[in-house]
Image 1 (spheres, helix red, strand yellow):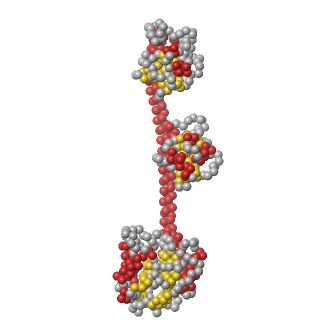
Image 2: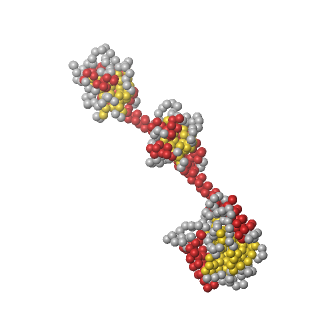
Image 3: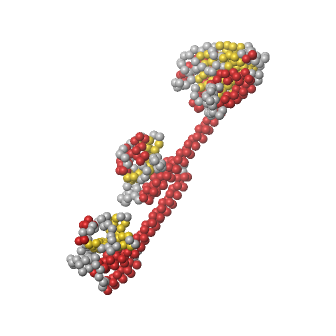
Length: 573
């Protein structure tokens, strides 16, 4: 018979070989062993000089087994293509010449099952130099048919084995991640967390160097590194230079695949091979970088999945540690502010003084824990009483510190000289000892309790409000500039007499500039309106009425500024 594609009856010897092959294949589970057994029978029965078997895998054919002396067969080929149901293809058929050229084979025979090609058998020329005989076709097809079920089972067995291995790896990774997660959750130290993450990744990937980079307001920062021979310059890469990498890093990447720039240059200088992004959907908030494996083996998908999961744990633990640090710092600041508030309140009079012919009431409400307003009422010699209300520029702790300094200085200077001299000295002290732009408005007066005369200076302060009998209104404007604005400042002293029934009210701008939800200021008219409605009450009632009115005016708006008010009411002698 001239055609290899024609079948002839199988001799008994070959039938016996097929039976023996069937028994052999039934005892094999490895695709390599199955195909090797097939090649052994073919070499013996067909007298092929060499043979090879390619297992089909995802559109490629991979060399799985070979026998006999042969030219170097390619490990992977893509030219073998599809096969018809009857299978066998000869070199001289003119079909798929590229495949025959790359292999140097004479015959190709598929092993098929259920319409799917599982493997391809390649036979070299016969050892005796003769052409293959027609009866060889039937035997070759019979061998392929006999092996099909065994190869299919072998493929399934290997897939199950690989799946089992992957599951074992996943189980190990999950256990490792759980252990690491417990450690990271228990730690609130950011440095320890970073060290634990890089050490774990190095141990899992079997690499000798690893680095953790985190993005922040200042740019991309080298947070931690292990195994890098020397420190690199510029531990922080500016945000504009790191942005192209972080924005495009949506999965594990080889360092060489990163956009050209300082990030890639640094990683290449430190011999990093791969990067794994940390957090973010459209933009990474950092990444883990690892060097090559010492063994040279490539990283697997499981490796990258582990690194990504570890990175998520890292970001979560770092966020928890950062929030804990912020909470601890906030608690510390709150304690310090509370102490400062208590100290500041200790500077204020414990109670207003009692004096024949007068009532006094005062209160200050800082906008923050520590405020920049203060008031004071303290006795001087010769039957005089010092009256002071001050407003330090700004709010919060800096204003509170300056307030304490002004309070102490005023106490030290009061009564030692004329009012204009005292305020001149105080202004010069503030100008020389505080930073530019800081100033203090101050109303300071000295009340002679016997004569009812009040000498005063209003240094840039809200002019006090005087309401007399019959509803007579008056503002006390005389004074000078705010304290601390210039080295030498002149101040004018004025004197008034407080008649029985007069109500003198000194406030800070936290009252007059308090705004309603409609952005309307309480203003001078608001103060006089309250004084007129409360004029018949005690000094304490006037003060309470004023504060309540301001609060009602601003509600529900937030506290705009420190608020202080001092009320002096002249009584019948």
